[in-house]
Amino acid sequence: MVIQLVILGNGSPEWEGRKILPVTCFCNPICDGLQAKNELDFIFFYSWIMDNFFGTTEAEFKDLLIQWDEKPYRANQVFTGVYHRGIKNFDEISNISKSLRQKLKEKFVIELPEVAQKTESKDGTIKYLFKLLDGATVESVWMPSGSRKTLCISTQVGCRLACTFCLTGTLGLKRNMTAAEIVGQYLAVKSDLTLGEEEAVTNIVVMGMGEPLDNYQPVVDALRLMVSPEAMRISTRKITLSTSGLVDKIEKLKEENLHVNLAISLNATDNVTRDQIMPINKKYPIEVLLDCLKSYPLKPTRRITFEYVMLRGINDSLEDAKRLVRLLHGIPSKVNLIPFNPFHPVEYQAPADKTVQEFQDYLREHA
Ligand code: SF4
Image 1 (spheres, rainbow, N blue to C red):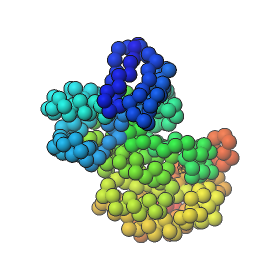
Image 2 (cartoon, rainbow, N blue to C red; image 1 turned 120 degrees about the horizontal axis):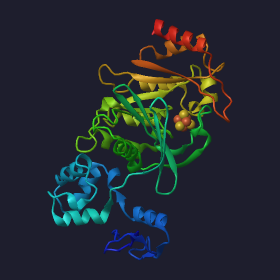
Image 3 (cartoon, rainbow, N blue to C red; image 1 turned 45 degrees about the vertical axis):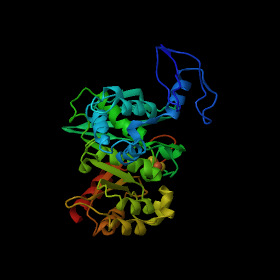
Image 4 (cartoon, rainbow, N blue to C red; image 1 turned 90 degrees about the horizontal axis):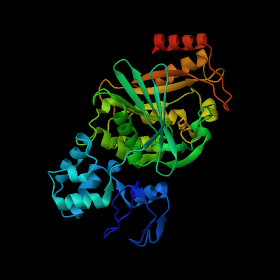
């Protein structure tokens, strides 16, 4: 494969041929003299110079069109071309001018993250390991259950919140993901699965690696692209964002007019226990978090999901169940009990089946 970097006037490269050649970029002071010696370097430089169209919101794109002296309504033609018709080459968008196509080619790439590994379980769950352009890896998990096909996506490489029951929390934060990398997981899984457009992914849960609200703007941009009728056209009812409880960011999210579902990773019913297993609780204690949720703008019939990872002897007593019912009183809510699944090096143990059953029964009877 020969690939040659051709520098156009303003620093945009074009693919040519089929084999990697050593290329040097002298297009502007930022990348002056950079040399790509192999394919990875080349792709890295290429994406560094170019923006990924998939991470660009309609608002940003309309601003760009105005700067280019183009009509803002062209955004609709370009977005529907790329997202609805699956166009990968701007030259194929025939209802816009040749000069706009050229500007788009000079500014953007249309690129999805690479599937580095795919592992399928007996129950049909598929784990995707995505390799990002800098070599970092993140996971997405596709979970089929009857007609419901849920995709869990990541928002950060690692996480800095250090919850003590979470594997990602042991990694620390490596970096935030871009909006393009966030939506790219959904688009890449959809194109990988040989299912119809409507069936491949019916629901998205933003609860993979990372704390979504700790990477606020790229996550909000990604959500806007997901729900936009011109882009991914996913119903807000089908998208759930999960947070450990960054209260300042939840307050901000209330103003975004996004109306996606909200899930709270609660996991304890008193501050001493929650401080111990989720250090973010020291900044935003349970009562502050729940108070902020009372004014979360829920659409009629919707509820906030509370995730509760049950850890033997830590948070699984009947007293916890009773406190949980009291805490959630007055908040339209549902509780998702998740018995802990032990893994090295975390030393927590799974709760006994009987304990889980009693906890669940108490919630059912008293909710
Ligand atoms: Fe893990 Fe989520 Fe806690 Fe981060 S916020 S450490 S990803 S549970």
